[in-house]
Structures are given as structure tokens and as C-alpha cells.
Length: 556
Ligand code: ATP
Ligand code: MG
Image (tube, rainbow, N blue to C red; front, side, top):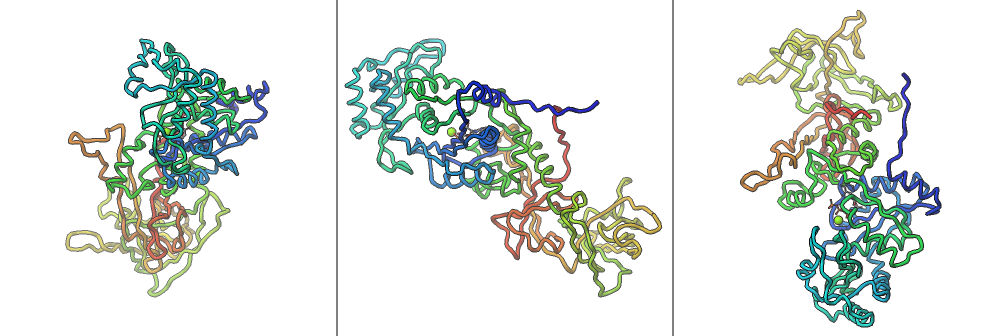
């Protein structure tokens, strides 16, 4: 049966196409609206690529807007890191970079407009009283005693709020909607509060700040956003979003659409846990390669393409679900396997001496950079009498199925010759220190003219001509599913989350590897030069991912 590729549209694309067909909007505009209060993570990548992808697909616009309306938690440092991450993912906002705080004057005017329409009032109840008046899911709320203030009084009080005449927490501006609404968000929500705080962008210009539910629809409307895509927890806020854009009479009101957050399993994603790991120095920063912030994934060696593939595979849905970290690993393997050179690196070196190789002789052997992708060309490998092989590729007394080196056995040295093990040396404790072998000069290139076969192929580097490097191997640091804390309250850390391997021997071609360069180290995985710690004369590589996986793509 011939397989047909079915390209089904996700529910957001269906909504957009209907809106365009019906002429509701001429073109679309989406946005990514991060609050600059932390580093972006893989979940944000989904939101970024979704919003940018839709704008691309429908020839629309994509805005990067910092939702910086809450001065308590926001920092310029985060603005810079977020821009870098969004750019790295390939989401191009062109000249459409906005800050919600630039709209504070319009937001103030919008509030005044609501007051004038009798749709907002200044309330003197304390935060605690407002909570009590709000009612519960099963009981309606009660009207505030200040609800019926006149428009004039409200205008006067709101202006004085702005002028700094009132202390924090003594007055708020509330939308006048319906205290009996079954949706608690519609029970006269607070839309402005007094907060004498300095803002990273507007300084001390304002001492009143708008609440998210009021500010966000205004930001969208001002920028001409058509489809305001957010995560599911805002579903219950949508009636308020619609109320704000309706009451403010925007000619082309934006539309809020919710989708399910992306959850990754087997990794730590919670911001507060990551913060703890950073503050306690357990990881070396927000970009520690064991984390899944975008900066950490980049440093580990993930590519934007692999993250895009991952996000596409996850799809867009209304149902919360979680995805295994193994799927992200699958994506990076798929992305790199044809793109990157496959080189030889010995992580745990053991000396191999070819006793019948002429003393003092060396030669250069040509090897393909990627057997599955000829376009990557070839390189020359230095070869000689003394090599390093992986310690685990030799055994004195091998188990039955072992195909690598052991006394009497012949194997292929990758890209080089057949060698037969003739013996070994060991220290007083029985640790093997040197393996001896002979080579067959007729097998140059890795094939025997007489057609004889060998079962094992092992990798190697020249003992004389190689580069040393530190290699870091990673496992997940905390598994949120298994519990973040131990019974005694300490963090439940995986003791094997980082293994530092010193003095690995890498083939000569890696000596010029620089930050973010990545390679397949044959049989060991994909590795990337650490952008923070690697030096020209002291290379450091991160293992991005091993080569093997039990992960299977879910059937479509
Ligand atoms: P967190 O609390 O995890 O840091 P956030 O929602 O507070 O996330 P924001 O800066 O407010 O972070 O989010 C910016 C955008 O990213 C929002 O539109 C939000 O819906 C989206 N987003 C955040 N987390 C995820 C996620 N896990 N999956 C998809 N989108 C997400
Ligand atoms: Mg947030």
C-alpha cells in the first residue's frame, strides 16, 4: 500500500484560515510576550516557534514584546538573554521589538475611558477584604461598598492615585463587571494598583501599574496583534480579555487562543528548583548543560533545527500532556547525524603497540568525514606504531559474544588496518597497561585482499599525534517525577549527573575546534565544544547525546 502523507492542520491554523477567509483580518500578527523575569526554557521555545511559524506560514507579522508591566521581578539582564535566545531559535522579529511599559500612557487613558463609561471604579477595600467579597466557586461575590462612586469622584481619585497621593495597597481601580458571574475573573477584577516602585524602563514616572489581565489585551490591540496565543491556564481569563477589548472599542479586536503547555519529563523544569540549583552552586549557572533552559541546550550542543523538529513533533493541542526527554535526544541525533563529521576520540585510553610496524615510521591515512554524506569530504589521519584505543575495547578474558580485541583475535582499526592481538602487559595489580598486536599491511583501508572478515571494528588515535581534551558526560540532575526532595529536605540529586573525564585523546583534526562546534565521536555520541570553559590549548567537550536510544517515534 502506498503511504500518503496527510498534512493535517492544527486547531490554531484552522481558526486563522477561517478568520482570513471571512475577512475578519486582512493579515495576521502574532507575538511572543515574555516577562523578563528569568531565562527562557524549552516550553517557551514551543511558544516562540509556534507564533513565529504561524506568522511565516500566513505571510503575517511576528512581534517580540516584553511584557514588563510588573516592576518587582523584572531585570534588564533577562531582556538581553531572551533576545539572544529568540534570535538563536531563528524567530526574526525584524523591527518589531516592543515593551509593554512603553504603553503605560495608553493604558492609563484606557482606564480613564472605562471610568468615563461607568465601567471602572476606585475601590478602598484592602486586598484581604477584596478576597472576602469575591465569593467562591459556589457562592456569588458581594458588591464593594465603593462600587457606586460617581464618575467624577472616580476620575479624581484615579488621577490622585497616579499622582502618588495614596500609599501602596490603599486603593485600586477595578473593572465594574458582575460580582455574581460564575467566572470569578469577571467579579470586578482589579485592573490598576498603587505601587511606589522603580521600573527598569520607566524609572519613577509611574506609581500605579496595570494588572496583567487588563494590560495584555491592550498591548495586543495597540500592536495590531490578531491572534494572541497563550497557554491553557488563561482560558478562564478569556471572557475578561474579550470584555477589555470590547469596552475599549478597538476596531480590530485581537482574539485569544489557548493551547496546552509543553511539559518535559525526566528533567528539572521548575523555575524555583533551577534557581535553587544555581544559587547553591550545584550547577554552574542558568546555562549549565544539565538544564533545559534554551541557553543550556545551546551550550550543551543542541541546534535550533533540532528544537524546531522537537516542537513540530510535539504538535499543538488543547490537552495537557508531557513528552519524554528522549524525544528531544532523538531530534538532535537526527539533525546532526548527516551534518557533522564523524571523528575518532578515545575517552578512556589504553596503549596499543603494533610490534611489526616499522620503528619510527608514520603515515597519513585518508578517511571519509561522514560515510553517509560524501559532501563532507575526507581528512587525513596520522597513523603510527603506537596508538590509543578505548580501554573497554580490550579484554583478557572476554565473554562469549565479545568481538573486539583479546589475545588471538583479529579486528579492524577503523579507516586503517586489520590487527591481531598478540599479548598485553599489566601492572602489579593486574591492570592492563599496554596491548600488543601485529598488523597486516595488505589490509590498508580496512579490507583484506583475500576476503577474510573480522567481526569487530574499533576506533583509535595516534599516540604521537593527537589532542587532549576534557570531556563531560551528563545525566539528568533531578527527576521531578521521582521527587525533587529527599525525606530530610535535601535535594534529591543524581550523583552521576556530571562525569568529568580528563585526558581524553582526540584525533588531530579536532585541534581547531571552537565554541559550539559539534561532532560525532564514533561509538561514543555527539559532542560539542563548551562555549564557556573550552580554551584553544585546553579543549572541553560536552556530550550532547549518546548514539543509542530505545526511543521510538510514536506512530502517527
Ligand atoms: P514560567 O512560569 O514557566 O517561566 P511563564 O508563563 O511565566 O513561564 P512568560 O514569560 O510569562 O513565562 O511566558 C511567555 C510566553 O511563553 C507565554 O505566552 C506563555 O504562555 C508561554 N509559555 C510559558 N511556558 C510555556 C510552556 N511550558 N509551553 C508552551 N508555552 C509556554
Ligand atoms: Mg509569567
